[in-house]
Length: 94
Image 1 (cartoon, rainbow, N blue to C red):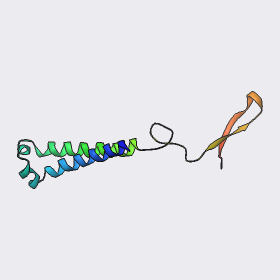
Image 2: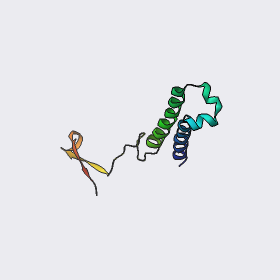
Image 3: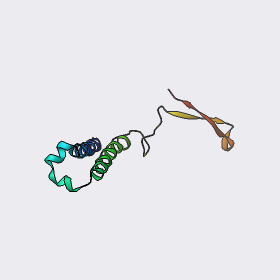
C-alpha cells in the first residue's frame, strides 16, 4: 500500500511540475523564468515516468522478484523409475 502511495505522489509531483511550466504557471512561479522550459519539462517527465514505474513494478504480486508468478499450481510429469526418472512435462493441478 505504501509503495502505491509513493508511486502516485511521484506521478502527481511530475504532473504539477509540468503544469507549472505552462504560461499561467510561469506567471505564478517567477523563479521558473530563469530556468529553460526544456529542463522543466524533462524534470516533470522524469517524475511522471518514475511514478508509473513504481506503480507497475513494485505493486506486482506473486512469488518472484518482479511479480511474474505462476497462474496455477503445476506439478511435474515424470518418465522412468527410481533415480533414472526425468521430468518430461508439467500439468496443472486442480
